[in-house]
Each structure stands twice: as structure tokens, then as C-alpha cells.
Length: 483
Image (cartoon, rainbow, N blue to C red; front, top):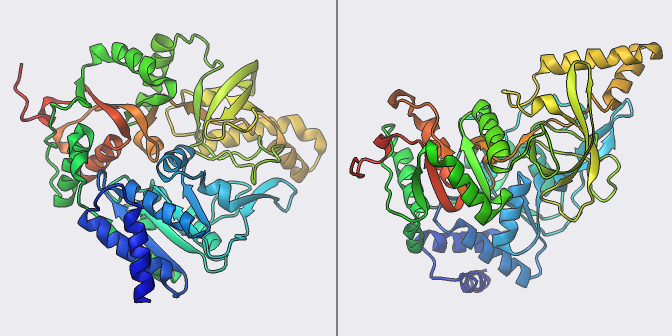
């Protein structure tokens, strides 16, 4: 065992592009032990803050697994996060839901989604952005979905394969899933007791020296230290870096035009603290920067805000028909606009941004949701739509036949989406953009708490090249001389 361990550690070390930090050295040792262990249901958690070389470490591990011929599966909660993972690991990655779910039928014959079998033997599943994965407990209330939670089903899927192993990678300083105080997929005691895993955790806390040349990572590191200390005063941010800048609201349009010209429409995002403010930014970006006049046009980028598996039912090339909350799509063309049941709809062809090889497909889009201030249509409004659509099918006679018809109706199944140039931080989590603008919004000293600091840290770490702080209070910059 010791000879094999030393040999494997040496292989992983040789795959690093630079001398590892002390934390990365511990990770090399833990990874080798993890891969050689004969214990059942082996799992490893890699918790790493921004700038600690988490992606470098995972990339090195993936290269060694490929050299040894070990089947390796890369997964992430969102399509954008999967694309980020592909870039640093060098092999294809998938969203979790596209890998672990398959299309099936419910008892009444409606399309539904169920857990797929895992056909692999001896595979290592590596899941990035694990802080986003929701906890177990309770069945989903979404029609057609039989899963308990993404975390439950991910673990059941992985260990249904023979001698498969799981690595969960994430940053526990980021926002936890909505409704959670912590990230359950990074909670070693909870995973051990809840899923009977043989599990260990490695924390990467040493910032890679060259990363501190970046103002983005320098200030993210400061935020992380403040989070660890529990200090809820105004964060002391440092300017003077070429990639980390203040931005006045009067200069926003010029900055957006410049960034869109340099990075393209998909390379810039405005992160804000509410759906209402995201809607306002999206409207202004469409009109003033992209020169769009219609409510929806070809080229618009949209984020799905409610799971939908109706419109991909004919897509035989995909393992399941789920258009998941968080998927980003692009409008290819609008074929028709219409009003029905007191709501506005559009027939359109769209394509999935993270699956560019897939053909565009037809959908009906619920236009009223584009600027709705909530995350998606509330249950009461969806029920009202159900009742209105049901009036068109009363001739079918019995309630079961009417309900079945409503669930196949394109208006009831209309895709719920929002524009994707400005997002809340929860919606942006998992993705990265070359340029990020963070909107401070309304803020007083009393509103600064641990949740806000985690929000800000998560927003900072979405930026790859440039970060702009929009209308941030001068109290954030105590070392900057006043004008």
C-alpha cells in the first residue's frame, strides 16, 4: 500500500503546473489515499476558498485519472458551471440533472423524470460548485418529478454503480442553497451519518501567491477572512488594482457598452440583490445598450426560472427532457405573439447555451414572467392559469381527462424565463463571466451581516477578469483619500 501510495502521490504532484501550497500537498496525499482505499462508499470533500488553487488541484487529479484509465465524470449544478469546469479540467462536463435523470411516464401517462441507472464500474465522479446542491428531506412538489432532493439523488446515483467514488468540490464561504444556513453537500458529519459514506474533508486555505496580484482575489480573500472572524462591519476593500474598480451610476451605460464590445453579450453580467432590480437592469441593458425595442427578440439570452420538461419531449438525443431552473437559453427566432387567458405569450425557437451542438427547438414563452418581480409565477397564479385553461376542455367531461389535457396545453406549459444580463447572486452562482458589475443597492450599516458578506464574496468570485462596484458607499474604501 505504501509503495502504491507514494507512486500515486508522485503522479499527482507531477501533474501540478507549479509547486503546491501546503494545503495542496495535503490534498495530494488525501486524494491518493481516497483513490486507493478499499472501504465502501468512499467520498472526499475539497473545500477551497477563492485563489487557493482548487481548480488547479482538481485539474491535476483529472489528468492523473485519465493517465490511469479511470472513468471520470465531471458534474456541476448548472450549465454555466459545467462549462467552467470543462475549461479547467480539459474534459467534457455535464449538469447533474442531465446525467442522473431519465425521461419516464407518470401513472396518468404524462412525461416525468426518474433517477437513471449508473452503468459505470470504478468511476470517480467529481462535482464542482457543490455548495449550491440542496439538502435532503421531502419529495419535490413539482409535477412529474419523483426525486427527493438533488443531493439525495446524486449520492444514490453515484453509489448504484459498482465501486464508484465521489468527490465534492466547493467553497463554503459562498451562499448556501436557498432556505439553508449551510451547504449540506459540504457538511462531512451530515453526509457521513445521513448517507453512510466513508468520507474525509480537505480544506484549501493558503492563497496561491500569484493570485494576490489580482484585485478581485485580493479583496475576496479579505472578505473571507472577515467572514471567518464574524466581523459584520463595513468590509475594508482596497482599490488600486487594474481589475477592481468603483463605478458611478452616471458612467454605467458607457461601461456596459465598452464591456459588451470587448467581451460580447455573454461575457458581462450585472449582479444585484433582488429580482426587481435585476428586471430594471435588464430592461435598461436591452434598450440602451443592445437597442432592443420589442418585449422579446431573436438573440435575447434568457434564464429558465422554473423546471420544465414539456418542450424537450421530442429531443431524442438527450437523456431526459428537463429544462432546469438555471439553464440559459438564447432566442433563435420569434414565430408568433398572442394573448390568451389574460396573459401574454410568444411562440419561439430557442437553443441551449451550454449545448450548442443541439438543434434549436420550439417552445411557448410566458412573456408575463419576463418582468415579474418574484423568482417565478407563484402557485396561486399558476393555479388560476390552470383553471382558465381547464375551461377550454370542459367538453372532455371528467376531471381526470380535463387535468390531463391542461397539463399538455402549451400555455399552461409555457416556459418561465427571465433575461440573463442581470441576475440575482443566487442565479449567478456557479457561473463566471469575464466582466462583472455588482450593484450595491440599498444598504445601511445595520444591514451588513454574515449573509450579506457571503453574498458579496459570492458575487466577487463570479468575475474572471474585471470587477466593477456600482455605487458602492465610500465606507467600503477606508484607505481611499476623499475627493
